[in-house]
Every structure is written in structure tokens, then in C-alpha cells.
Length: 394
Ligand code: SF4
Image (cartoon, rainbow, N blue to C red; front, side):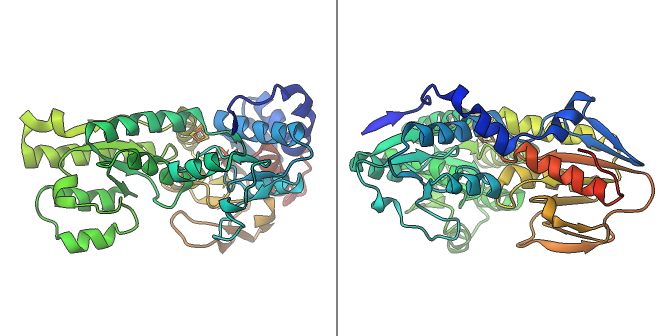
């Protein structure tokens, strides 16, 4: 097996392709004028931190480099490289094949032959997938983000120290599945994934001795390690997060669980029963802070651009929705006309249509985009909204 983790030194030669695929003159223009753009009686306010993060930049670059380095080989991705439909489509157009599709389809990892090249995505893969790929002996190009590797390092410590990892995340998300799989490295490794405060409160109740075992195991059936035993496995816990969760919620969940252990076992035991560290990545934190700064300027509405299955994008939309009418759209096609927009409210199972979303008269529109959204998709949205009032911004 050949393993690459640092690219192929082809950065300069793929630059024109990346620029052609993802660059936006409109976005560069907005950044250049203080993250603000006036178009007629509309003002767009762009968050200072938005769009591609360092991890996504690196993963996408490596994928382009890999295609160039191995023009005659079959190149696979284990699944979506990041959660943005346009980027994934572009990689398919370049002839990169997907082993697993978001709907569960795809040929599967078993199809890989030793001479093939497999790209691992920014969120990493499970230990089981890694073992299988290593046994095939193919070329591996690992784009796992450094911030995800940092989570793994800490979770590995929990496993060896006999702490159950409580992961604030979505159990089906690739990153959380990869993180949880780290606990399988030792026979005593255990994990439990909690999605939000509500689920954390159930865990707290159980720790305090008020839960019912069967109901608890049913609720977390798909979100815990096999053989999970809440009566013993919640005795010593270590907290971790999926890197893209809402940081304020992660902090709150940490404190809820610490308090539950304090109530159950007293302050003298807390140090041997509870561990925590913040694993929200700085890119996620910066984007969440920046959307708050835009909201402080009281926009009339917020547009959040990014894939509907992008965790960090949907959390930006959730934050924005607390203070302004918010529309999470995946691209400019969602803007049907001034009276109709397709968007996905936070927590909704599917996109919906809303009418009369763009009020008449002077408007301030806040804008942000998730860490997997390319700039050209942001620029297209600005152009589409301005065009509704007959203004060409390009
Ligand atoms: S959101 Fe954070 S963890 Fe995920 S790829 Fe970007 S920098 Fe890495």
C-alpha cells in the first residue's frame, strides 16, 4: 500500500482549474469593499469568515492533484469529499468515482483493486474502512482534516484510559462515525452519540439514576457502541464533538453532563469520572462568530448558502434564524423570483417553498456560507437577488 497525506507538489499546476471551478469576481469585489455591497436600494453584508475552510481547501486541492498525478488509474473517493453537491459533481466530471453514494448506493469498498487510487475525504473514514483499504493494498490519498485528527487523538486517549466517549454530533455523519470507530481500537472502548441538549438531558437523567434501561437503549440504539451498558458505561465519561456542531450547545452539553456526574458521585470523584476538551474546529467557530457579527447589524433577512447535508452550514442557519428571517439555500436556483424561494428551515426533513420572502423597499441582506460552499455559488446568489430588482452586479 502507498499512502499520501501531503499532496503531490502540483499546487501551481491545478490552480487555474480550481480558479475556473470555484472563483467568484463578485465575492472578491465584496471582500475588497469591506464585506459589503450596495446594489440599488439593497445592501449585502457578507460575513467576514465564510465559505471554504482550510480543511476543505486542502481536501479539494488534493483531489485535483490526485487526478493529475494518476491520469491513467481508476481514482475513487470513499464517498462525498465534502458536503457540497457542486464540488462533488465537479469531481465526478473529472472521472473520479464514488464508492458510496449518500443514498446508500454505490459499488462499495470491496470493488477497489490494488492498482486503484482511493481518496479519503476531509471527515476521515472509520477504522474498519481503513483496515479494509490497507488490506487491499491500493494507493491511499488521505485528505482527513487536521482538526478531525485532533479529535481522534483525544478520543484515543479516552479509549485507553477506560472513559466512554460521549460525542456531541450526528451519529450518521461520516465524521462522527469515524470518530466513534476509534473506540473499537481497544476491547473496552465505548461511545455514545448525543445530538442535542434534549438527548444530553436524557443521559443526565440516567446518570442521576432516574432513567429506564430498556427505553434508554432503545432511544440510543443506533448511536452507541455494541454491548453498551448505561449502568456502568456512564460512570466515567469523556466529551468530544463533531467539529461542526453549534459550539454554544457543545459547551452547554459538557456542563450538563459534568453537573449530572457531580450530583451522582460528588465533587471528590469528578476528576476521575469526567474529562472534556473543545473539539469544535476554529473554522467552524470563526464562521459562527462572524454570522453573529452580521446579525448584530440587524439585517432584514439572512441568506445562508451551502449543501443541505452540510452540518456546519445548517448550524449557521440555525444561529441566524434566532435573530432574522433566514433562508438556507443550496444555490442560486433556489431563488425562483421575488415572490418565491426554495429553502430548508433548520431541522426540516426536506426543503420547502416560501412566498413573499423579499420585501419591497430598501433592504439589508446578510450573507454567509458554510465551510464547504465555493465562492462562485455565493456570487451567483448575490447576482440572482440583485437581478430581481433589475440590477447587474457582475
Ligand atoms: S469544518 Fe473544520 S474540521 Fe471540517 S474540514 Fe473544515 S476545518 Fe476541518
